[in-house]
Image (cartoon, rainbow, N blue to C red; front, side, top):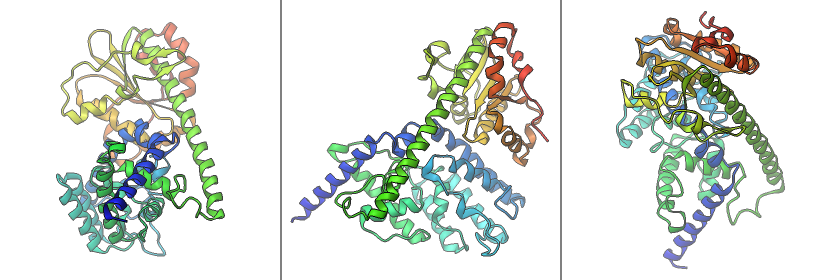
Length: 436
């Protein structure tokens, strides 16, 4: 068999695999990479969180444990990114008996870790970011391995691929390799082959532009293979019975998770609709997050009941404007463009991310009195309070932040619509005691 024929067979196999990956409505490609608005929102908050980690290391306030550190905030935001990042925080937990990872007790290792994160944050080229990751690997910090890639991915998704057990297993299956989970050398080789193969897939006629330059799409493919949700040909029949049973259980778990996510998304849409309804009843213009305008609740099309875009503002940067446009609901004085209230609905996603978006809005308009609300289920109030007690948010106490529970909003929606006079009506059901 000629080399050209072999390469075409490999390419056809890849193309068929990608098509099956994309056709599965419950694959992470469809539930996380393409259709998850939370994924897009996470990039800004994780980048901000990494900056907080770097600043705390510089200031000597990072702490000597994962719990309570700014790194915990970053990893919590990452692990909320669907099952593909489940367990991403585990390598960073402080394990006292093993003295790992050694970034909590060694000031020098902590400074190296912070320096690499800072350089990756500010990196302008792929070569620069890869050099920094190599510098971290060369430092030989005990317990710090390629799991750091899960952080750096959210800084540079086109250059760095995520890394976990299922992805390594999928990589080894797909490429017949023997990459090791905790090996920096294995990660470097994996990343190179992933980048090369991703470019190759996108050059094939039958799969042209079928995967994004964002390496999260390819990492999701490896995750599905490694989780046995996407068996690779010709190895399907070779899967042992025990592995098949494991794959079936995994598929059942994934289905339950997808169904739960759909229910949460429906509840999120319901709460957004109530805020739209109340805002309109109070004679306000209402803006809904630009990636939610397509939503419909009980026959009410968001695009028809909200203004198409935010009125022009003197935003400090394009990044801030893009972030504010992702706020779930914003109320404005009718016809003036003046923002009076903003709402982040946090059903199960990172409360931290929502606070950051509201903070960006408030700091962009220092001379405007704007009420900021975190709207969350009743059982998440403790989590809301815990976020506002973080040192990173200590300077927000002069801003008008408040918490509104789902149940109160549902119970009092009609009353607010009927008897409310202006945007301050919502303060009747809000809790303002967020700061310790």
